[in-house]
Length: 298
Image (cartoon, rainbow, N blue to C red; front, side, top):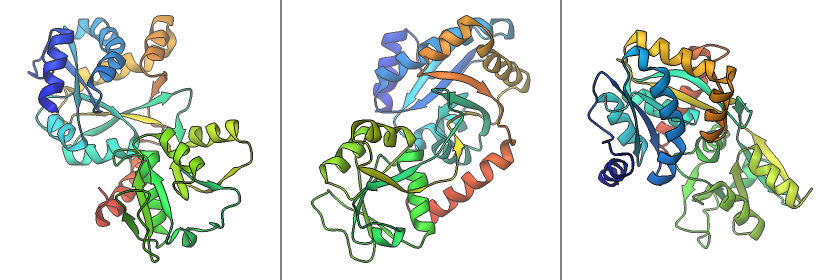
């Protein structure tokens, strides 16, 4: 997959994703859909290339890698400079790569969000204890709201999790069974079809249900609030360049061109500093990651 990502990027943008030089800035993303993420990141890459020309940046490139481990290695090796993702996934990568939280990224006008576990309104599931012997749908392992936050929540309440091979498998009576649905919309759909007993998603997923079937589903529990998206910078990024990049990204909201570019970059609405500071923001995130690691879930 990594080789495919590099070849595809070379053919489509006429550059290679790696070969870090002083005048090159590399933006990183984790996803299997290389084409989609190159298209998504290209407006931001072109904007930064122009805005950072006075700081010696002549080329901004895009690296799409298949998983967190590959991204961590790329950040450690200096092959990626800035990495964009949801907070728990990005925090996990930052720790593995000794990289630094850089900025908060707003998406869809939202600066923070959380995860919710939803069940049918008529379900007998009233507490976490009632998840024993049931099946919960998670999105995918590299999802903050669709897996990491809700899985940590369930385990914090003393419920073991058992991964199942499919929805037709019976969950053990003593644990909560789970399956990966691969997409937020699949989680909602499987819940509607009765294939799973509960689903983990973000508030938007619950909003889809409320719009389609008002009152038929309820929130069992919600997680802590975390940043909607974050930007991670490699540890040895030049401080002057890092400061300039942060200034450019924060300033995009102030111009029509900047706002238009952000809108085309997957509905971004602004970049800003973490309101409570990096340490206060990421301490609870790192604690959750420690718990997930201890459970063997990441």
